[in-house]
Length: 187
Image (cartoon, rainbow, N blue to C red; front, side):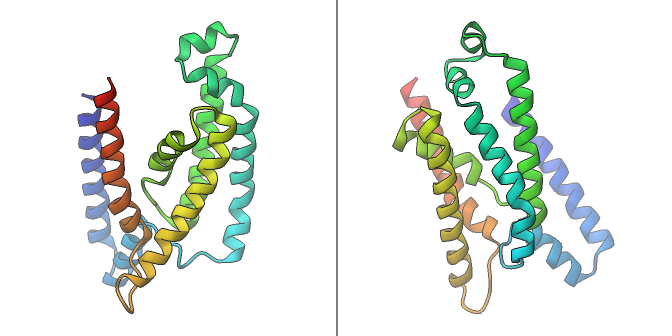
């Protein structure tokens, strides 16, 4: 039910976004907006990067500071609470920090899907569930994946740059489906 509600909400807001763009933007503006909505690294410059590095470092340090709590959450909120973790405080804090990091990155690159969804799951299969290894591995693998996707987006169609979100979705959606199928089979 939640998945269906999410799909319906996503479609509604995508339709509203498309309507607003079609109603108020010129053809060139609409192209630029659509490129930003699908994610793009080609317009990012060093001053943009320097502006978002503090948010990224703050988020990484906050996650590393909360490794014990994150490991406890692996077994559920009740288990974490029984270990003395302030569940609500940690959840709200980390969700707020994730929102800050996401907002900072999206403001510069646009929406690039599946990196934060697929990479940590893939790294969990490689390095295990301990967050001391999982957090740095996910950060490094996410950066490598994004660089690879950017290279592919620039060379796949000669003379044209694809939005990077297209490449990450073409890789991420099937991989995420495989992860979900594997989880369902394990249950």
